[in-house]
Length: 255
Image (cartoon, rainbow, N blue to C red):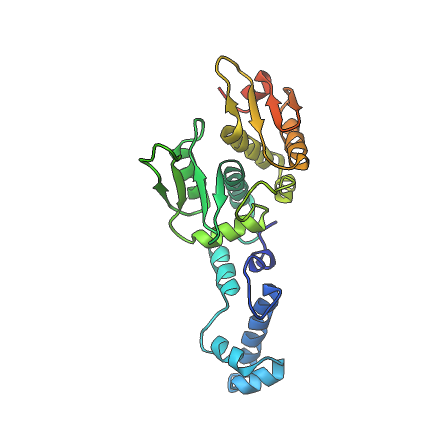
């Protein structure tokens, strides 16, 4: 399951390596060769592996490429190829980001509170993947309160991008990320509940709810199929919106 070491590495950019995963593999080759030939210096290692000695020197002296550090951090937190509870927690966090948050240029994810999603709910979603949070815009009248991680924030953001979250603007997303469809039914259901809690508009005096999306029609169709799979009540699709019937809304725990 995403994220994998390869997909995390490819969220980085590098001036030398078009594919940052190649840099990870070169670093691993250097470490493996040095372990087998402990008396070899940078020139010998570089010549043996056809790598510039200047690059090898840093890696032999404790330096690590950024993608390697990111992969190690993700692994230490249980985010790398996650299983069971962590997989579900990451997919739920992905729903929060897609529906009510963003990932900025430095890969830090932030999630906004709303009528149905309070700060305690978001704190719990971050806590489930092992990070604490801080709040910003708490006293702002014009902006919703946002929560963001206090530890390993950019690596967590890169993991979410590897899972299919947009980096920056969200309007170009053209499908529900594959990791959601590949998850077991209970996880898909939790994704839907979280997504609709953020995006479902409250209609005064009505038990139905409506999701408006400024994304490609293919995304709306995919979202419609996903929600429809998780509820028995009717969910209808228009040009730019989904209407969730009162029965379906109740199934999803909306009041």
